[in-house]
Length: 553
Image 1 (cartoon, rainbow, N blue to C red):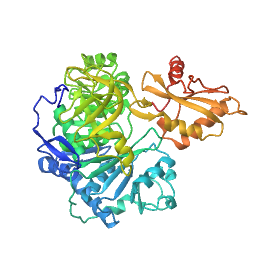
Image 2 (image 1 turned 180 degrees about the vertical axis):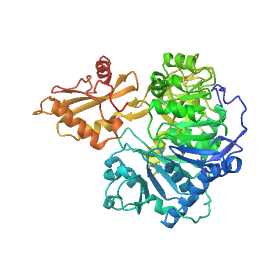
Image 3 (image 1 turned 90 degrees about the vertical axis):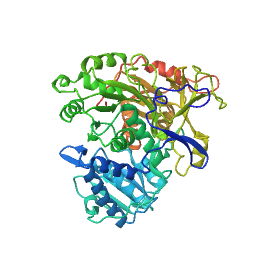
């Protein structure tokens, strides 16, 4: 780091040489000198080094790196035949499966932009994102066909390719029919070009399309690999959604960079995870703390040989001390490493140095090799070490901006520094503490939920006069969604109405955003003298409610 910011463990380690480079027209960032120049080149390098090594496992399917490259090339030929060109957007509405990775690298071969979408999204959100990015091709799960917007609402979308069992949906063709035996040349891309658009929720309720570049994804993948000492001998399990930045970058592209093995789980179940970890000699994991806890309490934990497990990374929430202690007892070779980052930072900005988790568990570690992190006041002035302010993050992995949204780009990125919206401190040793969220957000087991989006959905129901959504503490997921609702005159507080509100939200929101508990009243919600809703008072109320556990845990 420059200026008065302390140097972190990672920046002092000298693991890989860097140099300053001019990026995106107005930024100067430290960059790794020896690096792949695109997602496709990252895969090519893995094939050159470890072509016969296993790259992907999903159920009975196994692909070597050579097979992954060849399969992506065959799919790219099909995309090109369908009219996909460099710069076009290819949307992926896919769960955790090998075809997700194939489609990602097929798009990269053509210089097209992949747009992963959450399989938990509902029709209104899909409509907005597909319209906003102007996707020309959508690859979707067969079971999700019923929630796809009609073709009349998506004039740019020329093709829909369906994967999975079941009859073809109207307007879709079979994915397998587009895998050709021919090949197409690898497109020339600039590493500062957009490789992926990931939509993130915004405080206005409209998601923003963060533009992840080839350069940013390469640097984040290298950050993980260098900090964790990952190589071809390592194996991981993708138990988090591949469509999120953690699954996409922390797992998929990181393990392609290091030519390791990634086992894909369609959905996380502790017993299945432990079975796979033992059978596949898993050495690395990156999950939310709740997943580690669920593994520990599973009765099958002691049945498997987990001696290869050496890196246990986590993020999205603090790791409870009791969980740290129990993991140390049961898997003594496991090194726990807290991570902190966001979609806009292409995943990691900090990592916990090895062996420091217990001593610094109240922190998220230290800034990584090419990361400049500062704590700023509301006027954009740097604060002294240990002083609470907003965390700003800079580096080659920070996105170039938001797709077709210059206003959001200008408001959120200043001189290359992304305004995280998180309140925190950096101490004299460079350890970063995230104290609170400046933006009003709920963290449900690592899934980030902006309350304004849920509130906007509730306001669409005819009975709602006013509403406020707050976090309800949960011992497993950290937080769950609780809604306070003030009814309009003429509506009564009944169980039927609460069920109706929940059904309404379920129809328009991703399932993890739907409130799981409600306080419905005919009286007004608490406000201060200025008329502002007193969310702190409401949080205090729900803190005393019994935790609610349901099948979505």
